[in-house]
Length: 197
Image 1 (cartoon, rainbow, N blue to C red):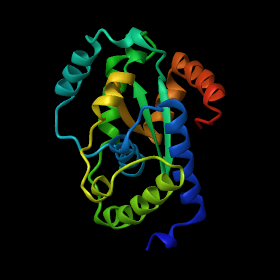
Image 2 (image 1 turned 90 degrees about the vertical axis):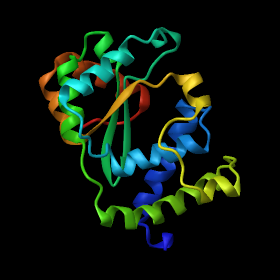
Image 3 (image 1 turned 30 degrees about the vertical axis):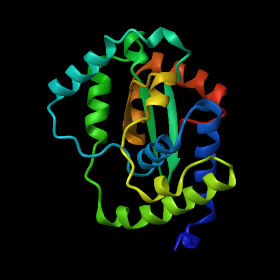
Image 4 (image 1 turned 60 degrees about the vertical axis):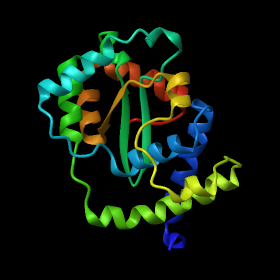
C-alpha cells in the first residue's frame, strides 16, 4: 500500500512535482510519468556501443533549437537515489566533452530489478494522489494506462529537451575532474536552491 511510503519519500515526490511546475509549467501527465520513472529507475540498461551513443548525441547536437530558450544545464532528480539530467548544451558550449558524457551515461545504465518494480507501484499511486491535490489535471483513463516513456509533444515544443541521465556516482566524477563543470554546477545550485554534492 502506498501508505507504507516513508514521509521522506512523500516529501521528495512533492519537491519533484513542485520543481516540475516551476521550471516546466507546460508539462502534462505523460511528462510527470517520465519524470518519476527517471527519478526512481534512472537510465535503463543500454546495449548500444559507445560509438552509437556518441552518434545519437551528435545527431541531437545538430539541432538548431538550443538558442530558443534559457536551458537548465544540470537538473537534479532525487527519489531514493539521485540522478541528474545533463543537457547537451554543456557539450555544445565546451564545458563537457562528448567522451565524458558518453562514458558517464553508459556507466550509469543498469538493469531494472524486480524489487524496484514492486515498489514502483506504491510510488506511482502516491504521485497520482499528490498530482490530484495540486490540481494537476489528468483523466482517469490516463492514470490507469501504461504511459509512454518519452516527453509529450507539448513539452518538446516548449522545452526542446536534449539531455542524458546519469547517476550520482558518475556526476561526482565529472564534478571532481572538470573545473568548468564544477563552476557551472555552483551557479545552478544557487539558482535552483539545491545542493549537488
